[in-house]
Image 1 (cartoon, rainbow, N blue to C red):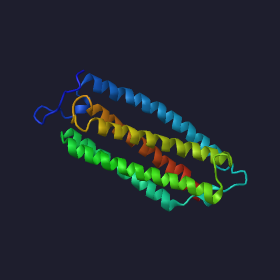
Image 2: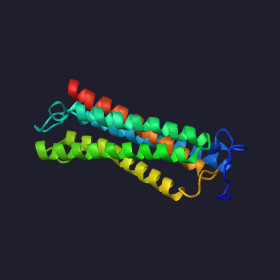
Image 3: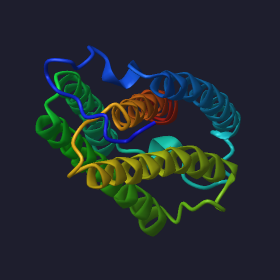
Image 4: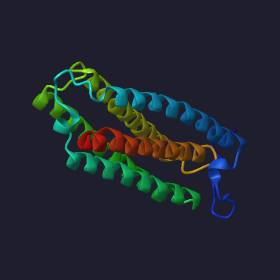
Length: 207
């Protein structure tokens, strides 16, 4: 497929991300990928639930977790999901500049989330000596939450790469599926965080 299939307001399809066979195949293939990721995270959640009380005499979840910071992190990530929706809306209306703007805001919110997570991990290590090797609970916690953080980092690298690569190209039928696929991925990691917030932090505080 040629990469210069530029869109114009008069001929633009309603869903440019699915207007080509290649776009439809990417969309379908990505759902299979998300299915595998869901199984992987389900295993990590199951492991965490099984080990969350195995503290080996170290700090417990109730002693460690402060919901104020976690709430801020949750708001940052959920808001970034909303801004990605705005970006896709402008993509479907062929407004490339506004799409890039809202995806840029999405990236900033994602970086804010990562900064909070780094601060959180650093605080646990320096204030409580709570590390990956402290206990089975520590290993399960850092594996689950850190694995999610790795997904956020990958998503941000993906988005920034898309934005810079296509900054001068504009929107076309070749890159529209890529932007849309990213948005699906971002919503996925936001949903995973909601489960982490509930299972790890809320259950940790209420026992």
